[in-house]
Amino acid sequence: APAVERVARVARSMSAQPVDGTDAAATSATGGEQIVTPWDVEGADGQGVDYDKLIKEFGCSKITAEMVERIERVTGMKAHPFLRRGMFFAHREMDLILDAYEKGEKFYLYTGRGPSSESLHLGHLIPFHFTAWLQKAFKVPLVIQLTDDEKFLWKDMALEECERLGRENAKDIIACGFDPKRTFIFSDVNYMCTPMYKNMMKIAKCVTLNQVRGIFGFTGESNIGQVGFPPTQAAPSFPDCFPHMFGENKKSLRCLIPCAIDQDPYFRMTRDVAPRIGGYKPALIESRFFPALKGESGKMSASDATSAIYVTDTAKEIKNKVNKYAFSGGQLTVEDHRRIGGNLDVDISWKWLNFFLDDDEELAKIGEEYSSGRMLSGEIKAKLIETLVPIVEHHQAIRNSVDDAQIDAFMSTQPRVFASLFGDMGDIAGALDEATLANAKPGVAIGAPAADDDGVKRAQQTQAQTGENGEPMSKSQQKKLLKEAQIAEKKAKQAEEKAKKKAEAEEAN
Image (cartoon, rainbow, N blue to C red; front, top):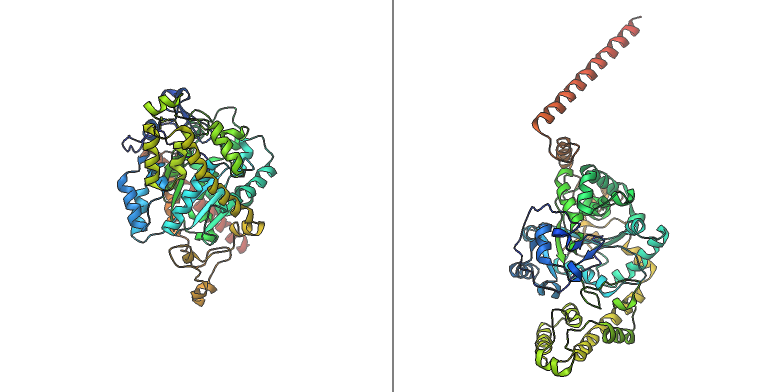
């Protein structure tokens, strides 16, 4: 889902130039050396992911220092460490979001979580912490999708268990600090409504089986639920999926999706379909992958509690895991370490500090001390423990205070006041005029832009000019279609005239 659970590997700096329009398959890297899909991430030969290759293959653009500075200037806030340090490193049309925002146009955020485990690990929290910062910085609304249906289709789990885990995971998500007045959390299984289903159907009709195989790597062994799932994750990119939040106008808002780069295939498909169903192409801001505790080549797994730090771990468990399992870039002996220094390219304590230590100057000092050999492996691990324990304990305290009533409030489909979702408007329901309140449509956000009938017609016209393979029709195909329509219209008119004459004859008799 913007299943954003795998995030930011601080492996190597991005040096690729922005490349647009690439139509490379997302199922593997060049030559099959590395695999990056929404379900599998594996570097070449057991090494870390090569982001230089990935950015070229997927056709996204690099986030530059100039873009980070522009975000700071537009929001009036210092960029989040994940942005300053290149954890979120790539984007699709983030520049257009900033252009629109500077013109006073509104947008919303969309991210998600695939609930497959009782407890989240620290890597799961990365995208939510960043999204919470985006919400605060831009003062915009957010929708969070819980893909309980996806996990049911891919995992050996009962559907009811996936639903239960979704509510449990919602507690951890809420604990990340989202604004309850601007945030809607929804379960696919429970929320599925007419507006969302209609968008899913429109998306599905635009994508052929061959296309979905090429994008996601489906095979003859994939169940039909898996093949049909992508529109479910694509649909929330369009605001009219949430009439109680944004109204019924598909072009009332642009959408920005923070996610790990392995989710890019979903939204390349979505961006291709968007103009054909009358919506904006969603913009993306994408992250690297979060490294496993045991090293870049290792994997964080629910079946191996030592591969990650979980938000349920105690201070003692965190200390034990870091000291015992965190892959070290230190040398074999103290003498060698003092002489050669620590290897920052592989040391997990250093990589994790890049995520969780907020102070840039302190982080730079630690990097210098460790790489020069003046700081030992045990000392950098101690610094990581000192950093992680307060973060986890703070999260646990907030999560423990989240009850069912709070979850229900975040999942409520009670119509919101549209203007109150943006900027510093706050709760302005009392300031609305009587006409606006009187004309409010049941189930639709109060004061939201009206449905764009012209936009619907344009989308229908575009769709009518699209062939069965999802590609634009040739002129001869369009002429054939027009001729068929004219013949059908003529036959209908003849039938109408015949029926009219018959009725007149019967009336005369």
